[in-house]
Amino acid sequence: MTSAGLFKLTMFIKRKPGLSEEEFHSYWTEKHPAVVNEWLAKHGVVTYVQFHTPSEIREQCKEVGTGLGSDNVVGYDGYVELTVRSIDALKNAFSDPFYKSYVQPDEATFIDPISSYRTFGYEERYIEGNKVLKQ
Image (cartoon, rainbow, N blue to C red):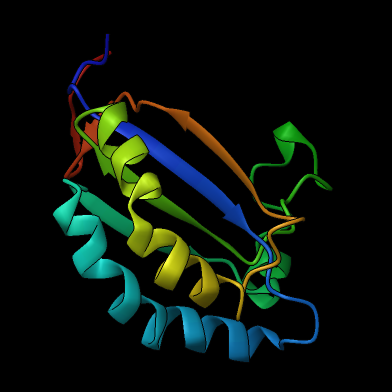
């Protein structure tokens, strides 16, 4: 099904109301990985990537790629990608009691779950390391 046999869970994240951008990014970078890294590795997560999107950078890039529309910069504070070899790996991770006992409460300290979204799929790579992989 996928060219590399890998699946991705991508979560678009909004910070918890009342947190400044600096507080959000600092917590997500410095505290949250200590809670999730071992849990993710235990369940076969191949990569865990945080993508930080502070409003200052979003504003600076507002005119980039305007062929898609100049007002369509997504207003999330960041997104996270989990890459796995099977969808079952994700199912197992999120059904692990550790998730409900430790990860979910930690997420609640800095994430607004009502305004955050997720999607699942796979990636197709066309350029890597400045080299065209396929046309």
